[in-house]
Length: 412
Image 1: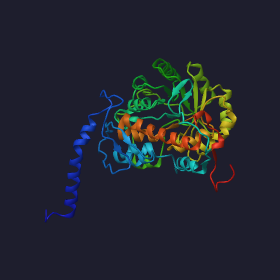
Image 2: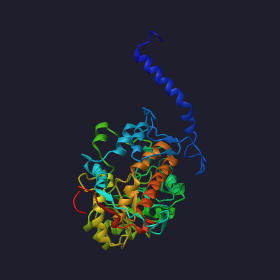
Image 3: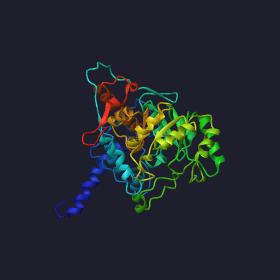
């Protein structure tokens, strides 16, 4: 070794380290989504935030490792997922549109809201359970619709559905999934909603609605702010294209409508017996029109900053919409949820539940269905602690008395 160059020595050390971790990695790979693992299956947990180095393969192939994650902060998941995902796939999931102002604002806006605790109230351990459009959930957090979960993990939507169900909550399945809506429905023991992208050929959308009903979905979500996959500067620079092995098996060769109107809302209502959730509402005016058109629930969302950059943070839009709705229908809020305190603030401002997106896909990439459940377990633990400290005994007790404008941010 004395005559070996510094570069060769570094390469030798990297090879030795890679060999040392290969055996446990192969053991973890054996525990895939298709294996008959019970919900209590044991596996060596991944400690999120540690040095878990893994170089992406040259050819696209998502991980198939299934293991629980030890998570301190859901924000850590993004950096860990970057290490194991294909760079193009990671950029597609993580990026926002254009200058990403809305993506950043979704997080920054939570910092402008402070929690106002009510101490010395003698409340017991808080009850996080809710009922949402007739579905019993273990906590007020659900999985928002996202396409192409196969970019994150070989189990794709099957893993997300199982992990969400094991956490006792609700999975929203996108038309742009990599697995059939029937297979996804069978993969979860929990409730599920179907998010519809309307096709130019409305007869194909009508068929999808009937399939969703037959597969046991309990609501339809219509996204009004997204007509195509999210676009970002990062994916354009990389020339990212969807891998050939990740087809959108539910939409097939259909093209999605590029223009929607209230007639399309009526079409959905006329062609399904399921309640309709309108997703993408950001203004009180739109919320009022949604009520007039008979929607069953409203999802306040800016699509995680993936579509129209420059619109307000969803949490900033929430109070005005709540004032218009006046509890006539449930309100779900997504975009930027990362911590139990974020959930707390959204519920205090009037949301009935929140939905999470990117953290679910990051957790899926790192641990399959067990990773998804781990992410929910962490959020549940944080929200339980936050409610206990702040003096709340149940989700039903939330109101605006528990939040205020953060100091230095103007009047509440």
